[in-house]
Image (cartoon, rainbow, N blue to C red; front, side, top):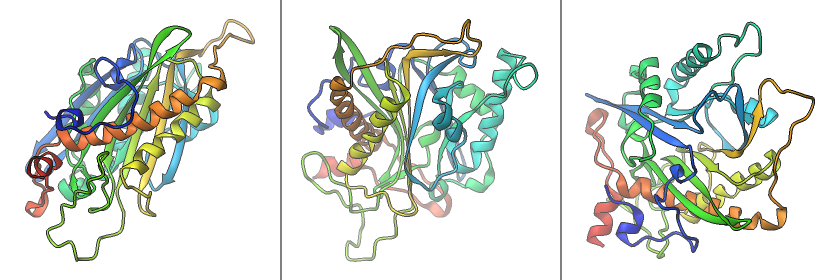
Length: 344
């Protein structure tokens, strides 16, 4: 598996974490289930924000909708209440409902009071349409697949054509899952901001690499380019203490990382950023009317803005560079950026 830095592509100026991954944020794990059979090329990717019962001990979270052409679940409540209370699952567009059911069943098993003695649970699922490289009408993703992705989660993140990224395309190349991170120093200690993307966006010919090259996979570059109809789901994690307002502002800067690579967020593109911090937990059953929360000084937030931009850009590049060949319905496939880079 190649990564962008292995191929000489450096995004930005900040230093990455030890693994250059979202799992550099302590306690964050990622797992995949990949489904490849016949013309089905799809799967599920799970992000476990922290160990333990997330419903009872929620995380501060925020959402930034750059362009809302998408079918994700749970984002409205995250935006309203500013909390995350389930793992995050990503899959194809028609697998969202199935993954929601899996998260609900898992949460009820952990906390039987849900929906009876206390509130319901807000399951969070992101999606992109892998239709061109997979038979999306097969509805291949099952609840068992979703739960297996959660069970498979660990600190090492596989990138490229895996999990939810199996059938995804990006700038006319094969896309998929990518991740990256940046270190920031807060009060003399190392903290991290990490990003994981499901990259399925961008018109062929629009990609701009950090070194200025513009890879174009189209055999006939004079032909009309189809409208932008792809999507990207960005999940941003940090252990820096932020409130919801600050976290949404940080999420907004992920859009700069997407744009640096040449995207313009077309009418048919779903571009969504979901962020959380592990530093501020919100108890479901509070002991009193108030509880303490830490908050970064706004005078230091520029470091996180840059980290969000750079980590998002590099995550997308890693998704492109790590992608492996996939053949879908009608023998459709996408060229690989790693092969383009090897020959140019």
